[in-house]
Amino acid sequence: MVTTSRENGPEHTSAPATCRLMQIGEAAERIGLSIRTIRHYEEVGLIVPSARSEGGFRLYTEPDLSRLAVVKRMKPLGFTLDEMRDLLTVLDALDTATGADRAALLDRLAMFETAATARVTALRDQLAMAEAFAGTLCGKLDHHSGHCAGPAQPGQSGVMSGA
Image (cartoon, rainbow, N blue to C red; front, side):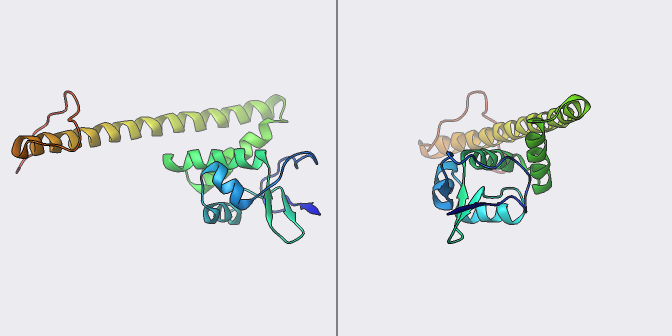
């Protein structure tokens, strides 16, 4: 026997009876998160399993995994738990919203897209700086020892002071 449970988290449609249910271990493996992380996301209200078995095991559906994937992609961009919760609420509401409500939700979604794009740009800038630094170190190592673990990046042969 399987019971559905949605009382403690963001509302979204329960899984149809024909939808395949998976336990937390399979969900964790499929989405690439730890069981502990999924339990934490449940504790803070980001994800609620669609059902529980008679024994109390969490049971997840494909839509649950889609929600987890959204959270997983937001995490490295530095979004807060509240921002994650807000975006999930927007995405859930967009499925049924109409008129002015839909327009307001699309505005919120556009704000998230703008924020995500800005954060990706900042990460690219950080990566370029890190690659330049690694290239500088590689060049110094190659100059002094004749070998380097990684190739210097083209056009990234900066000089380190004090080396």
